[in-house]
Image 1: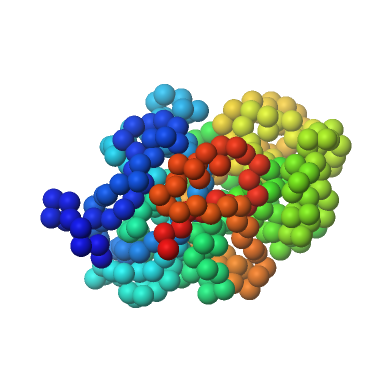
Image 2: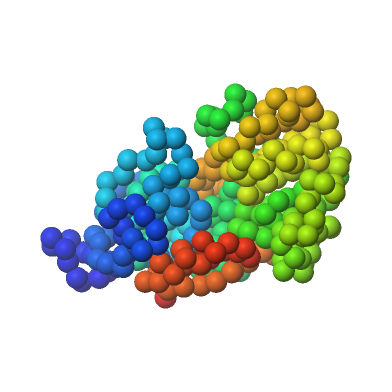
Length: 343
């Protein structure tokens, strides 16, 4: 543990922000090492995975209605996805030991309390899983949120928290033998979605820019559509399931690709306005919000460990260059995940 002190408490290096804004608000500075509470473990972080909620929160969740925008106590530390080594455990934690290599999506959804962009992180033991032995910390840190999102949309929700944007509970659909179109297939959630769909026996049509075709076919995509040349909604029909990993207002264009009885799962459902059209077409539109779940990470981790599911890394930055990592993310067309490293 770092011997530096702040108000006589041990401190660490972290990326903090003191106001909402662009990447320039991210500061590499000293912060107090989080205190261990009952039910928690403290992890010495080796790597941190970046996810869209990181820049949404950094910016103040401007896309949300004003009454939904978070009120956070500055300074805050962004991030949820970590891989590292347990260096302390609470007395009531029995399933982990000091020295265990673990990975986790910490306290999501929450605003400003996850503290992942830091040398040390505390996490509820229920949100932690042993790191797949076959993965290094960089690849393990890249997995949690994106993999859990794909898992909870497609395999098992694992929680009962209702999506406030829809009246019905989200239910995954059987995938074996189904024709599944995945938009945004090369990104963090998308590349896991492709692999999980193939694992479950689906015929996968991947949509991304042309430079990602070889990558996605290597992950198992049966067909590929370069959206920069061909609008997918104009070229495919009778799809059983569309998983739109981009989502937003444009997700309604995929309704015309679906057969009656099909489903559209927008990972980012805000802005969808095609409810009446979906009803006329007999299409289910459904989404869920990903939640931390150590048991699901352990289960999905077995697929990572045996190579059924692979983690793609777009780029790696040291923690102190988190601003550059966010600038990279803003450029778009990411293949896999961006990771911060602390080793």
